[in-house]
Amino acid sequence: MRLLLILLLGFAGTYAADLPRFTEEGDLAFPANYRNWVFLSTGLGMTYGPAASMALENPMFDNVYVTPSAFASFQQTGRWPEGTMFVLEIRYSTSHGSINKGGFYQTDIAAIEVAVKDSKRYSTGWAYFDFSGGMRALKKTAKEFGQNSRCHSCHTPNGAVENTFVQFYPTALAIAEKKGTVKSSYKAPAPSPASAFHQIREKKATPRQLLNAAQELDRSAPVVKESTLNMMAATLLQQGDPQQAIAVLEWSATAYPHSANTQDSLAEAYEAGGNKEKARTANAKAQQLLAGDPTLTAERKQRLEKAIAERMVRLR
View (cartoon, rainbow, N blue to C red):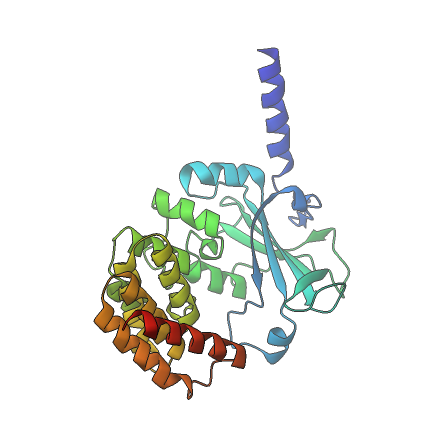
């Protein structure tokens, strides 16, 4: 019993420490221990307006943290309790350093911003603070932006849960969807490749229905890219489901009619499904498209030529 009491007091102390602290003037004290909070997600090069060339060349990382007590409550209810604090830590990026040859990694802090939920203190229930950092001095306290600030005009209509961009935090979004707290105004994007794969594998939707809907939402979505569709079909074949693989690749062949690679994959799926006639047709089309497919490297073209020739012999 004593041990339980000690543990409870320890947790209470931890949660009390992560509540907002205000000065007599109403300024928010900087939450110096925020990196011990719950990490929600990182965005790279995100912008809610027109993309700037500089952002694309050296995209900023946006790291989002939330107080442990708030996240514990959110896990139970799908809503953020009073006293919730978010920290948005913005960091510069670089791609040059050590052994790195591609992509980006995080470097110094560029800015730190904080959001607080306090319905008694603020008319909209939320307030936003800039603690600067980076090229500007890091403040010990900060004043709120104001209830008519750009932060409110963006967060209020666009947040998936209350004023918060839960749509960008995968684990939190899954909780909110399960609890039914996502705003009806939030429009979900095209499904991820993994989500689409499992819907197809579990026959919750046909490949044609799912991929048509995804393409209608976003023609550049990863799930409708040729490389993703080939990977999805290959995994379906490995898992012993040639018919679903065929359905995915037939859709891909329509979306990418000049791809020798897709026709080769389709021939493989037809062959695995026991349809030799269609396998021969797709194999012949792959061979026909091979010379004029500009997306193929010399090495890939050579591998395809070999696969097509070997399949041709098998299908005689």
